[in-house]
Image 1: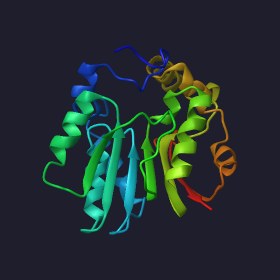
Image 2: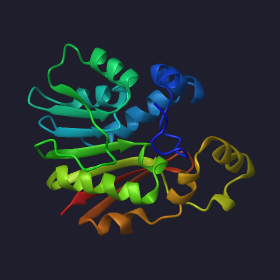
Image 3: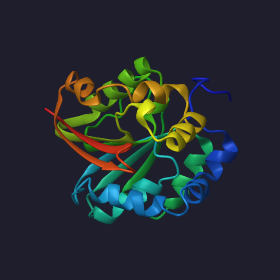
Image 4: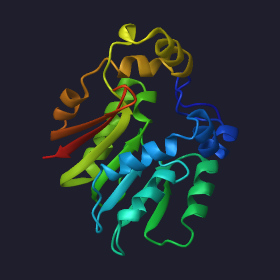
Length: 216
């Protein structure tokens, strides 16, 4: 199956999907694991939270979230990659608190419930902007009032002001949609959907951010 959005860098081929966690470990020189553990800790997950993990991949991030959940906590992971689905299900075969749904996040859907937290990690920047709006609409619909939306992705920055090496790598690695993503005011965008009480945590020379937005 070809890409839904030909210029996207977040739609992965089967080989990359099957080996994604290994690629992340190697590409980050082993630093990704420590980084994502810190991110998940800063979400302040509570033991009874119901969490929606959009673009959940292999379940690596969800696995870290389970550390903070009690017996009544739950996670629903959404993805469309068969390779990711297989790994996710294998990772949670003995944990009935965690479920996988083969579901596109860029079209309207209804899971029949609302969640305390929604999390999306390095996915939304890889869509055209009008598609990002659809993702946010889905999140808004599925969050409880007072629920939190966590976006782990690039921060807002001026690419022309990056050090030359960083700029070279960013241009080589990232898709064109990412260039548009970093120029937008995401707190202003999310405010338009009724979110507020923003919190930010920055990483990697402030080029990466965990943005928390609370549904009013």
